[in-house]
Length: 245
Image 1 (tube, rainbow, N blue to C red):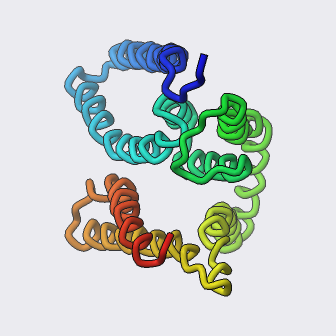
Image 2: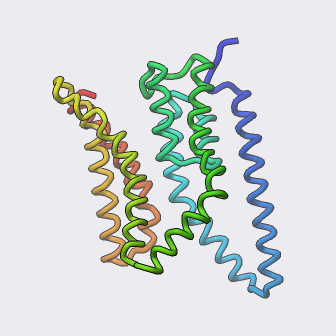
């Protein structure tokens, strides 16, 4: 049987896993509603909380959808749908999949036809993100305790450590963006495409932040990420045409 990234059996397996996750969500939602009644919280407050939470999940859902679409050409719909629905991260999954494709000698956008390569990419996308499940219970409490002690002794240094950790995480992704800039020396300007796309996305994010702050449109902050992703991806088309990607 010829392998296909959109094989029905893959959809069945992924659908079963996601159905289990949805069942867990419904279970805890029911438990939360019952607990709210025990605490005497009014039904209107509970309904308002549920509707508000549902509305504000639309923004990150759009960002996830963008990731699924971006990866679907190479990996089909099922695997990106699974990885970005269950403990997934659009910033990690896309980079992990891209690196795995490159290691297999394939470029982004090329459909995977070898099942061994498909399984390898699935493992790369899964193991890396699953490490957090193992590390969080053992590391987070000690790490937060150490940062709290530093903040209590010197608030300024506590903020510096927090910012340093955040910048360290961002730097890992910046390396991926700038890794091919050196190709300019060889006359290849395609390495500038990710940099330009990042710049456009950053500008969109900054503009959304300014509008949300100045005009006091708070809901815009929830949609800044998907907007920056969509506009950034759209800008990749003219940048590729201009820079020869």
